[in-house]
Image (cartoon, rainbow, N blue to C red; front, side, top):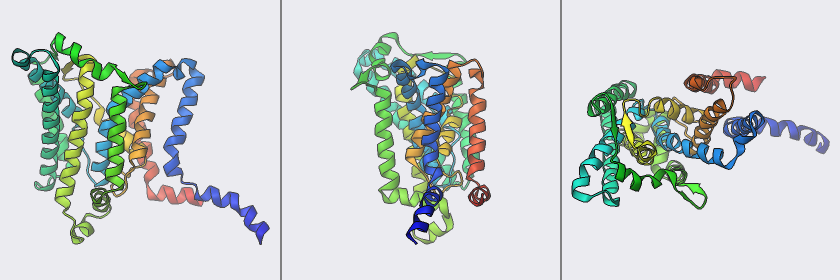
Amino acid sequence: MTETAMTQTPKSRFQNFDFKTAGPAIALILLCIIGFLLNPAFLSEGNITNLLTRSAFIGIIAVGATFVITAGGIDLSVGSMAAVIAGVMIIVMNGAVDTFGTGVTTVLIGCGCSVILGIGAGFINGFLTTKGKIEAFIVTLGTMGIFRSLVTYFADGGTLSLNYDIRGVYRPVYYDSFAGLPIPVWVFIVVAICGWLLLNRTAFGRYCTAIGSNESVARYSAIQVDRIKTWTYVLQGLCVSLATIIYVPRLGSASSSTGVLWELEAIAAVIIGGTVLKGGYGRIGGTILGALILTTIGNILNFTDMISNYLNGTMQGLIIIVAVWLQRGDWGRKHKNN
């Protein structure tokens, strides 16, 4: 009996291994190995720092997207939202120079403006989806066009540039480091920890999962579905505003091309991380890995001539399609049987 159990142990362990949870981590490790083999400079301190910093923007937005998708929603407006927030921030800070000068106060005013705009934009998406009874896809597709049009209008078809002296004060938010890590990475870490605690250790997180699993049952369970779903969009808007705050000092400008495809990258990071697109299950840890995987793929494309880095969007689109296909229940059953 003992011998039989011992011979079955490796098989049973293999069957019980959670590929869905460990998959993103394994994929990231394999990508790092491939990157190193293609070019040893991939693992250099400078490249790793750059990779983590670039992951921070999409990662922060993706944390917010995890809540929206877990609750059964979708937000296609995050890239355009970031663009219009960045544009208004620059306009406000440039306008505040005459009154408050080119110091920290002006930068803080711009950051406060970003948070207010992000929360407001998120609330509009959530309100129209819940109280307006309009599909989230339609609402956020509409606001995506509105936000992108607004930043183009504000820039008069060109580019909005931050005051040079303010840029010097604001620049360290993106380029400076603390304890060996760039500030954007620290912001990403804090947002990820807060997101994990909110999703896994609070009633709000449990309600998001319940709503995404079965909205009708959630309503019968006395869960305030409309309020919770609206808050997920508000949280998404807040995450977009935080990402924009650390993005603006990078270039000190905003235009109609700012944030293009960010919604694709955020959704891809969430799906790659194991969050179910139909809702009902979300993983903040997986989302973090998903953001790192996407950035790593883009980074590897820059190190090799085998595939043009202009095809980065193509790779992301393919990843989303494959990831959603792998989540299909019928594929999972076939895979298990095999």
